[in-house]
Length: 472
Picture (cartoon, rainbow, N blue to C red):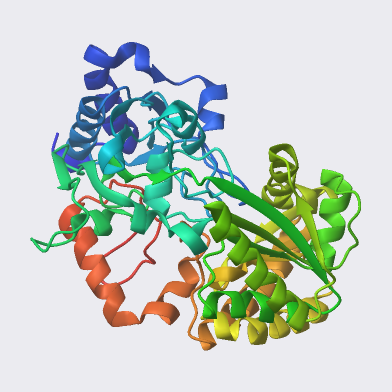
């Protein structure tokens, strides 16, 4: 029988038969395991993979892709399942390739401020294990995401205003291509002017061009002093103006996060933030040598006072700081707790920081017109914010939330922004890609996909909308 004439089930059976000769104990078809790998977080999409393969090495990943490439069987990489745009949802008759067992720290070069890790390691685990070196990895998306997944989605988070995103903190990668070939990109040096920048190509590719198995990361020295504070404002514009001026003045604040009154009310209830009112609130973190922190705080306080801030509430102890940032990271669950039966859909727009106030004004108009509850929060230091749209968990509710989401994104794009500052595209943002990038740029992206994954087995249906020559 010609290869392409075999059914999807027959091709999948051929792959599993091949893999079981060397990886039998690493393969599961148990319904509970398949269900766990059928979805990520926050998006109402799921599909059971036909099987889950637990990779323990780069060579395992290579073997899986080599077999799947030969039989045209789709493969979706899976780390911690924390993605929010449907990145890990498999198509039918697909293999979910779980890298969560690949948690090794392969090298720590303290003098050069870098390390090499396997893709299944989480940021939290890395930082716990290298604590004695005085170094840490700062990119903080909030959840227990794997570092490989953070690379794949080009993650960032609360500390990006100071340390940058994954793009700025990855030096090199080990990647397995669709054919099973293993390649190395980048290296350990901080700059190079040789060849195409393949590292940047794979960072943010969402597992559609290759599967990342190892990551060379930049590390940073742990700051001598950390200080956190909260400031509340009667007026949201005053808070946004404060954040904008902090960045424009070059104050190296570690984090500056915003919650609007609706989100603050939810977080006060959910995270027991006693002593705060449901007002627009900025969360600050300052880091560095004691004198530098004192200078940062003084400059920030002056800006806050000039913009009608209601004064600082300081979190002096490590426990208090942890409580504040946990409340910020738990904002999604706080919004969810406002109506436990509802669905919460998160937007992820970003604009040039000077246009953030204009965008938020328009978003509030759209929220009011929709009749939905939608708390707003974000990384205002880099112009990125999230609207958590709370809606009935019904087809009608989803449609209503989607209409609001489209209006918010349209406003951001009109202000020269992006539909996603950190969550990635996955399935959730496909409809916005042509408007944001244009048909010409998408044709180049599709050409890359077709060249590197000619049978379209790598995470099909994600990142790129269907179009000429390419079908997701």
